[in-house]
Image 1: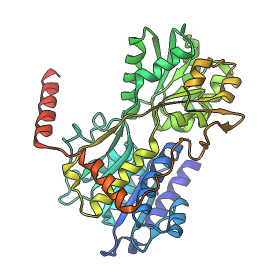
Image 2: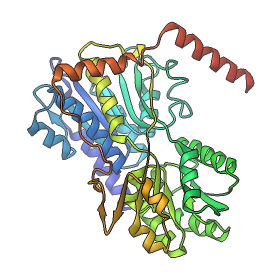
Image 3: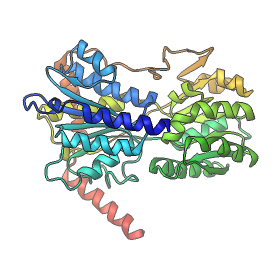
Image 4: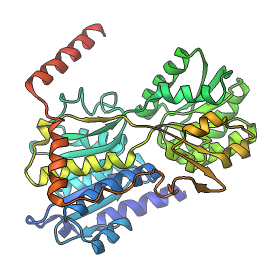
Length: 402
């Protein structure tokens, strides 16, 4: 009942926002849309907003409005600020609302909302450009076929999760580990794809993998219990909205059973993961997204001509408080490899629960230098006829094999 009431409140909030915010042809209006609330989504959003502020689209007072999660009717940019609260029907409605308001561009964080927006605009004659971040598998999710084989109005950055390295860290923790557990949300493509990759990586290292599935947050307790009963010695889970919102619960459950919880983003240690090893530049994904939007607004690039970016950045973080609660020892070799360690609630690097990465600000540089650097980066993504032909050939080979 509470969830239904909150959904109704969210929908009413969308409908009651004045339509005037999207009616000034002289000022660009963008929609910033997130699927839910997590440290990763906060970091990516901050990266995009930091770039826009650096280029003068927001002043400091306007940025405070955005940081409070409110819509902005600004001097140089209007922003529709939307969050679906991890509810798919709400995500569908907020995309429809942005299209009804004829926004000039969509900045989207997470796979779920990007899927919805891409599908909703696929057959439009003149769709608004979509720039996404925090999308781990745009091809598996059907957002694009290849980096340059995509809808002309869609672009963004894909983070690469180094699953083999993440699983290898489990063996650094315990060289004798034999059985690991994975919790999958079958309704989320990124979870299914991630589970497949995690399983393959683990089996390649000679590990046995046990899998449990969840549909809602309330399933986590039974899923964890089932895996423990199958003899798992640690848990490592693919990304999903259920895992993101349930990591704290998983920490308490693993503490009860005396096994460690591994994460695939270093920031997961702030939710209770014992060791988190994986993609380590979520803030930078938002920065890339912002660079694309600025170049589009300035007329410096056509999003149809650049590929989907792919970022690879590996890092490790350790939560000694979780390890203590679980009765787990962390080897000195693994501690020495960590980008940061949490002990007594305090990070060794200055990372915080709100901004759980080491780098969360832009480098200070003159705007001319920043502009040149951003254009040089985007130029590396240009889709040449040769690259397009090569990717089409690879796709045709893959389809022929299937």
